[in-house]
Amino acid sequence: MSWFSALHKTTGLPVGLYKKMDRETKNHRTTRSFISSSPGETIDMGERVARGLEQGDFIALEGALGAGKTVFVKGVAKGLGIADHLYVNSPSFVIVKEYPGRLDLYHFDVFRLDQEGFTDTLDYRRYFYGSGVTVVEWADKIKDEVPDEYLEIRITHVSPMKRRFDLRGHGKRYSRIVDRL
Ligand SMILES: Nc1ncnc2c1ncn2[C@@H]1O[C@H](COP(=O)(O)OP(=O)(O)OP(=O)(O)O)[C@@H](O)[C@H]1O
Ligand SMILES: [Mg+2]
Image (tube, rainbow, N blue to C red; front, top):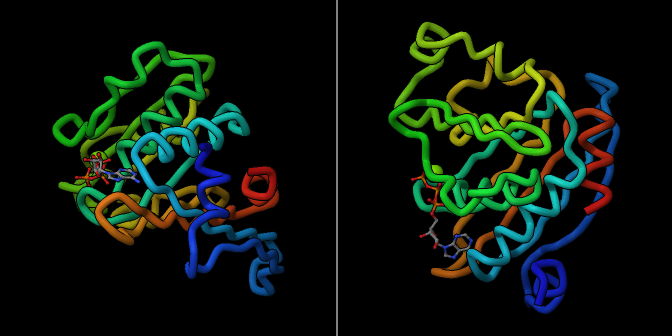
């Protein structure tokens, strides 16, 4: 069962699609929520999101310890054609790991850093505005460095195996990606 069909089988949880114009920025925003019932479904979701990605794209992941951020990145890696996607693990101690694929993946985990530590530690712009796809775990810690347009994904625990994913596309292109899921 795919994560998408599984989603429709879940009960009682808000799932939906809405679009709105952000009056302040005039940017389109689309938000959708999904439920994943297993790590496999989360990988499927990551893979599906990756299909819509292009050079220079940016995904900001938010969610508590063990929410499933890294599992989701494994799926993105799979979707980007990265051969050893199952070996993707938290780059906590190196800040960023690069994986070559159809598009290269730059996987950040900034849990142990604050905004200042991050900007002092590495030339992150080389990645954020580079030719691959950037995915950042704990992106809320470096809010000021997140590009204006990006895909925001918030993951919350529902139960031991269930996770709620709230995806929000900031800007037209990312809204389209969310729309097409
Ligand atoms: N539906 C699900 N989706 C994703 N992971 C799940 C799910 N159900 C259970 N899990 C388990 O939750 C854990 C998620 O771990 P993961 O390393 O992805 O979290 P994380 O958000 O990256 O945490 P950290 O902030 O420590 O890096 C794994 O052990 C995984 O097997
Ligand atoms: Mg992680």
